[in-house]
Amino acid sequence: MAVDRKQLIVDAATKSFSLFGFKATTMDQVAKIANVGKGTIYTFFKNKEELFDEIISSLIIEMKREADEAMDSSLSFHDKVHHGLYRILEFRIKHQLTIKLFQEEKEMGTPAVMEVMVKLEDAILGYLKEKIIIAIEKGEIQECNPEVTAFILLKLYIALIFDWEKKNEPLAKEEIARLLEQYIFKGLSNG
Amino acid sequence: MAVDRKQLIVDAATKSFSLFGFKATTMDQVAKIANVGKGTIYTFFKNKEELFDEIISSLIIEMKREADEAMDSSLSFHDKVHHGLYRILEFRIKHQLTIKLFQEEKEMGTPAVMEVMVKLEDAILGYLKEKIIIAIEKGEIQECNPEVTAFILLKLYIALIFDWEKKNEPLAKEEIARLLEQYIFKGLSNG
DNA sequence: AAATTGACCAAATTACTAATTCGGTCAATT
DNA sequence: AATTGACCGAATTAGTAATTTGGTCAATTT
Image (cartoon, rainbow over all chains, first blue to last red):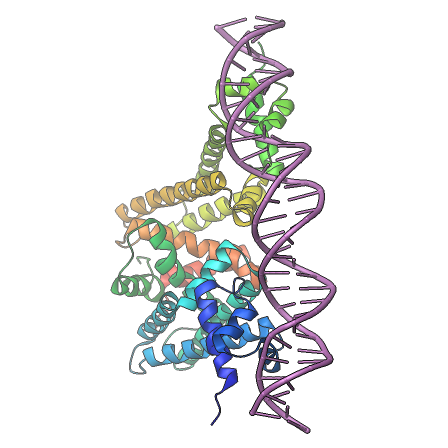
């Protein structure tokens, strides 16, 4: 069987985007790494952005699979959320591509990258929202707006994992779980 | 009594920073608006950044006064936090200077502006932390890390007021109060 | 006939340089 | 003693030439 040229291209582009970011990756370079002519890329993808988009879509699918894997169904809702979200954000830290894109978004504001990061966030929010709706139906948590709740949970997590580190010692995973439980799932109030 | 030259300079600089931002404000312009010679500015301030810093310090003091004013001592802790934080963030939206600086930080990343924004955030966090420590002492809320708690409250507020609006209908003030109560002060969990 | 290619093109980006502007100083002036 | 604005080197910007880039397509290969 002949080589899968499309896959070669996707692999090459993923590698290059991870190393140099979206803007600094040229189609000539992708073609060279993939060992195909540049024209071949355009038989599979309309343009550079569409190639980028396909890679990000795969990334989103992979992230969901990771999160599902972390959400043991025997866990309580708040442990499920904790493990799932933590896994997703860990995924974002560990993978070259997401690190590079995160940096490119902040430092250069490349439009295509910003678009894609919004898409990524929306995917996470949608995923969370689903889980919250199920938890409400099951009576695991009280009635609430699933959209806002997903938003709050994600923002809180990002704040605790990424923003807190900018000025303080990083919080351990268990520490974050404790905080989440104390604040969101139990509440601060006395009486 | 002769005119207060220092005050003229501060007023002129505030006006110019508010209209054009830090980077686009020139010392010649400040001098002109203030009706003083440029050299006079340097008899009161070591350089452009120090002038900027003095203005921001005043702004922080004013913000604290606003927050104190909003925190009626008859209110419950969570109403106090809500009114105080809301007032501070409203202050940030309403005042030209803070709008302009917020924008300059995001769009140009001017170093002096970024520094000052950190200082501003730290001031708010410190203020909140104090209030939290008092509330713990009074038994109004349960034991918690005041530093982390202040951080979480502020991040949540910013998320609900600024970030939520980027993709959704703005939340009304009462809605935010309700969310804060539901999530932080009461907790989501059943049983 | 279908798939693949790389020379080619207009448009965008970058590298280079000249011209201007800016923060800060200080001798002259008030 | 306080104030000023002409002046300076450093930094920014404007203007441009040179290069690079995404994308096309006629020629080539399978």
